[in-house]
Image (cartoon, rainbow, N blue to C red; front, side):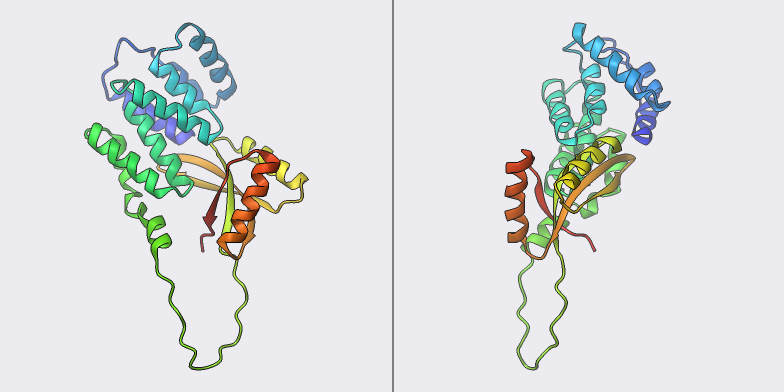
Length: 238
């Protein structure tokens, strides 16, 4: 998060301040210095009297550890306050989150929206770094199966695990570790993978390894029933 906050501060100092919005620059500086808890407490206090302030809403979303919950807050800000000085930053954050969790099609939609609605946004340069990979997920899903001609006997190959379950994505490692511990207590094989997208770090909780998509989806249903977590099946990266 520190890299992202640094980028935000650079952009803020190079742009004009909108007087109608609360000036969160001092809070961003505190956040950059690692004062996470104190900033979060102050934002919650300020939101009591300034619930409709888009700058404070942006910072609240930025401080939200659960990626899915944060993405809903960012989207709400963009839709309700498209003229906010942080609207383009919110779209960039949405793009970064969905790219990090492997939802490249959704990430592409937010990238295109950022490009169309905020063509001069300084965040476009960072987003362009990964844009060439946005269609990879669709290509994998739509690739035809190729049959191997039975011209000769081939030695049986070792079964390969191709799928895993993505149970959550967090901007704070501690929260990912808490979820990992919950799964470990229930004897699930689980790991955490860090993914960085243009300065934004996300910690992805991955549960199990499966040979087929069907096996993974069966386990996904059990995880939802046991933990009330709406995860998703993803391919294991080589």
